[in-house]
Length: 151
Length: 280
Image (tube, each protein chain N blue to C red):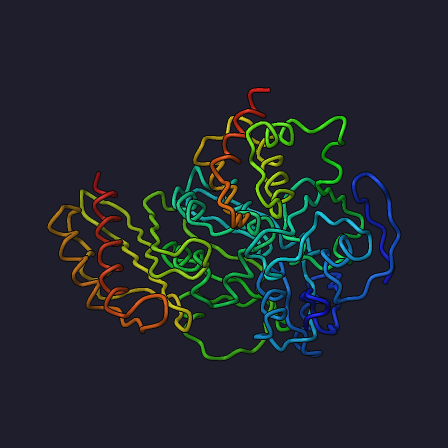
């Protein structure tokens, strides 16, 4: 079926199959490599994207369900010249180790920063539960959130 | 189901319901399996444990997405997400905040629905023991009209006849508590316990105690503990005795996560904590 969806501010008209997941559409078809395939069952959070502003696991959304919706991936968060405050903070505190989960961590924290900038430490930790960071960089993520909030 | 290292879904026949009547017809006559938020259905198909291939996507049925409150009851549409439940009712039903604190992956709560969790009849769904403690009643839509069933009765029914859950009606009890012992990212609890009651003249009335534990069990109420607590005052002695009775009244199994004796002990400890905390 043909759907129209807005990804990172650009409108795409694409033909999708009923068993295509949003991950398949974003990564394989549109080439957005920040959307990772991890567990594929919604546990690791590596495929998190913002769907109409809310974080979702793209592996648990069928591609056709994105019809008429707006999707944001980390590619739209900032540019090399103009990083998003969270990206800047991640660099400043050295939050990135292997980097695999960073797009998801950034999007989860962006949603928290936008929806509840006064989030407590407990709330930041709770939000990060959605992202499995095997390097264990959670304390740095927390620190980066705090810096971004202050900015 | 893997291709170049990627997971994927097998071929699916997905129909999108245009109305509740449309959904009822497709479930009853055409054998479609309901997909609400998709968080369980899609992951279980990906893992190969769910062989359903005819899915009925009801996520566009906005008439199933609502929360209506009266003085002492709430009616929530089956498509109300876990996140919406917590955000809209958490202040008046504080146990929903406890549910939220124990949520394994908060991102999932933006898609997972109340109705989807209940229809799963699975211990991975923390909302089930909470709804048992809140005396939930289920409202189904069938081609013969509306049907109602108490949640605890529905859980005991062995029939797997497909049916469309329209809404869930539950009590707005401020004295409802939830506690869970679990392993990090796993959705399945080692043990979770929900408790609710009404206090009249210092005595416990309308007591509900529900537990959920290992993967092959159904969440259920613990009637011997409920009967014991009924009419008693909430003090330390009551909490200790109820805790002991709880450990004796449930029958969990061993699995790779925890042995049965540990689960029984955990259930007693969690109930004791809830009662002690409720008593201040």
